[in-house]
Every structure is written in structure tokens, then in C-alpha cells.
Image (cartoon, rainbow, N blue to C red; front, side, top):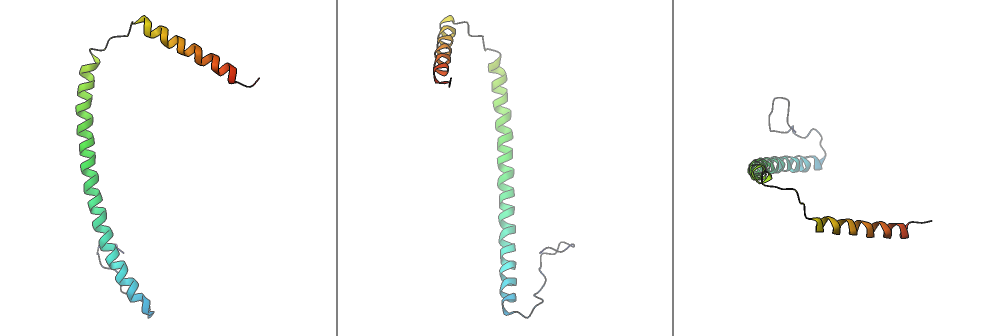
Length: 99
């Protein structure tokens, strides 16, 4: 456990139980391992966040430029087909719906 002063050492076992020394050794080693693991995770997360930020910025620039060239779709055939599909789905829902 970490004390208020920030020391990395743990208190020595207070009990005369023979397993207390074993658990103290285990907890000391586990704490070292956990600190190293958390430090590595923090470094990995920093890298991922930097990558995500740069990726987002570059994609945003491309989207802004491509958005200017978008035109509304005025193709009547597509509109007709979508309306036809919608009508078919509406009929199917009416047949399946309980009376």
C-alpha cells in the first residue's frame, strides 16, 4: 500500500501468523507488477488518443472539402423505387399485424 507520503514500501507484517510473510511478499511483488502494468497501459492509451485526434483532424479536413461538392440526388428513378419498396413493406406490415 502507498502511504500518505508517497512511499512505495509496504508495512511489515504485524501478525505472527506464518502465512503473513508469504502474503506480504506476494502483495509487494503484485504491487510492483500492477504499477508497471498500469504505467504501460497509460502509455498505450496516450498513444491511442494522439492517433485518434490526428486521424479525426485529417478526416474532418477531407469531409469538409468533399462536402462542398455534394449535390442533391434528383434521379426520379431512385425516388420511385424507394417509394415502391416502402409501399411493399407497408402492405406486408398490414398483413402480419394482428387483427
